Length: 247
Image 1 (cartoon, rainbow, N blue to C red):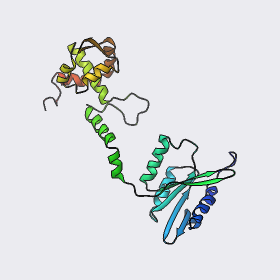
Image 2: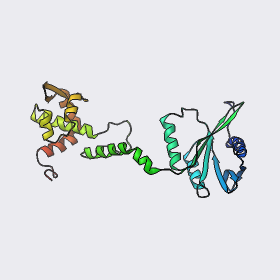
Image 3: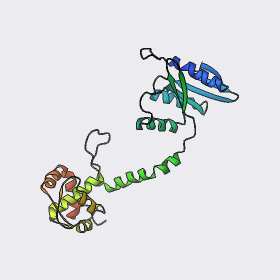
Image 4: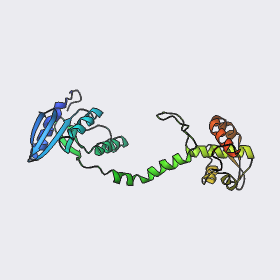
């Protein structure tokens, strides 16, 4: 198809009709608000045509599932990389809806119809098992945080993570008590990652005094002033005034 030619949804009908007709289906357009229906014996396929993949199209297809399990959406084949994360995520959503996907390549000399996804039951338990590690990472992150310091939906803002909270706790203790070893810090509740945090020194807050002993440097003293809420929290814990202390 010439780039200057305007594409209509109706342009997708003929390639679909030919494809399913060759498979032995009787194909009809616009039956009871369905763009395309294909019937063979007692098997009913419903196909919705759109120029772009939209939420409305997915809603429309999901509604067609009330009439048959064999529902497809058909769109022109996207021009962007079909190996991209964006496309993989789109396909995951379509699979979860248990809907099929047809991609149509409309070219000047040749038209191609590709069944990208077939309608099939979605195994949510299998998905949970495959993503068990990611689930555990989320839970560990939540358990490692001491408060809700982030605003959900924020974009391009710095996020307070459990790792950063640990860095602030270590910085607070070094600033308050002076030179300490990872073992001494862990005994005060800084956690198993203490040695790694000091060694990697991601934020550049810590300086090694001698083997196995660290201090808070000037950069660290200045930077933790930007996290007064977290510093106050750790001050209460280590001053024994936190309500949860000792529970």
